Amino acid sequence: MNDAAPDTQHIDIRYVADLARIQLKEDECERLQGDLDRILGYIEQLNSLNLEGLEPMTHPRPRQNVLRADEIQACMDPDEVIENAPASHAGLIRVPPMMEG
Image 1 (cartoon, helix red, strand yellow):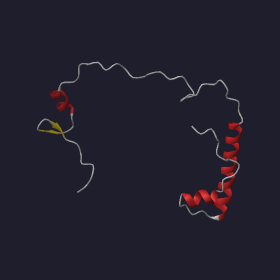
Image 2: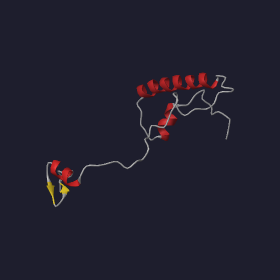
Image 3: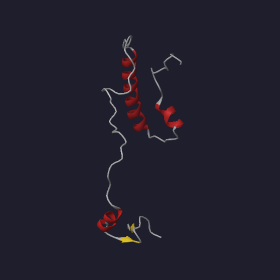
Image 4: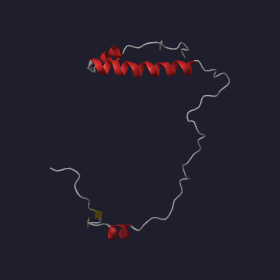
């Protein structure tokens, strides 16, 4: 892994817009450049923190498995399901078409 941090002192918004193939007006460039500079400043603050001894984490809160065990359970009778359907044909539930044509 490369420990060298990228240069976050200044990134030209016009360069980024060109890479993204986005055309920006002059007032948009000025506003977005200010936003980007503030974001990069915040990243610099984060980079200056002493994180020695802290374990990396994937989520800010402790996570636990929320999945239940996969157990066979009783289910509805297929005939009862068909009886409760608004429309059916040949033992299948009829649904309205999603696309025309």
